[in-house]
Length: 174
Image (cartoon, rainbow, N blue to C red; front, side, top):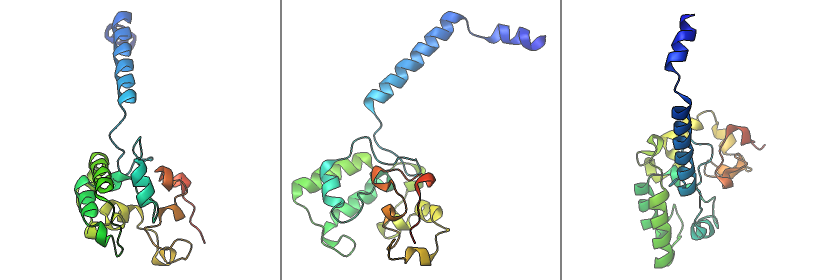
């Protein structure tokens, strides 16, 4: 009896409820139209809403075009300033393309707590969140020719190119 009385007294009136629903609907519509600046490491889909074509073309020519949210804007800046020594290779680009990609990475880089610091050697695969997520993967698995090391995300994450790293989409090759 008390609960019935309490609920009757605390429920908003129909006009109040309608105005709240309208406000939430408006907020959700505004967020969906503006999009989000970027995804964050640890989310199911880590790619930003819009992938920069020059980033996709230049980076995916040699390796997976990693989701920008996997590193902080500061770490991406470090990477972009050293393209002539890009992890043992010369990945230099013309000035306009370098500026375009750098600007985009600054806007899309990760700000989530998992990527709040420079990883060792500025490598995604040495970041604390990456190591934590892959702690059960043995050195023998990484060494398989079909995987070829931790940098080859798409070897096991079947939807890595779409930025989806869900555990449901993991297939570890033999």
